[in-house]
Length: 221
Image 1 (cartoon, one colour):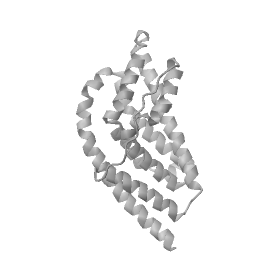
Image 2: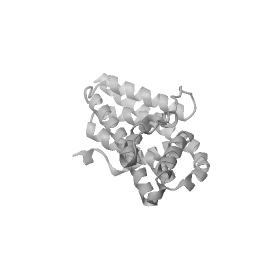
Image 3: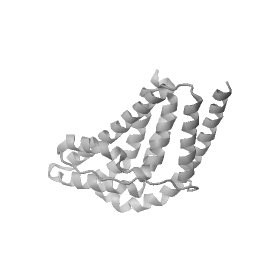
């Protein structure tokens, strides 16, 4: 059973990781875009705007979910391979050092896609590229979860974890898109972003060392 492989605590932790990664300057363009898109439909009422925001985050979250399933499928091809564990540990080590600001990895450019479709379908489609558009701030956590998912080799588990991450990442955007006043308080949230990212980096470093220990056992066996 899928629920036997992942505890509620892990899902909550991954969801919280999504929220933390979203509280950053890179998320502001997505929030502003959603505010503008929803604002163009204000004549239909606030609830219609909230519905459009939900369509947007569903598009974003399901895209991340399917990327998790793909990572799980790929990792399943190398189950019990020490090489996969070493690669995963190396990725987590680099990302942990990056989040703790001990090293600086190159940043990917932030992209703000343009919208052509309208209504709920348009909002859903627009959420798809935004799953990866805010890459400079969200990429480290996203890649860390994908690396861990690949190590598990379970597509369904990967989908569930990345879906939870996507929903967490979408929560601040949903609040900003539905209640424009949230953006005025965004800088207060950003003040905690650095601390939370450093804590996340330490967690990744510990996880990397644990994975290296497992890889050493597989290689020795």
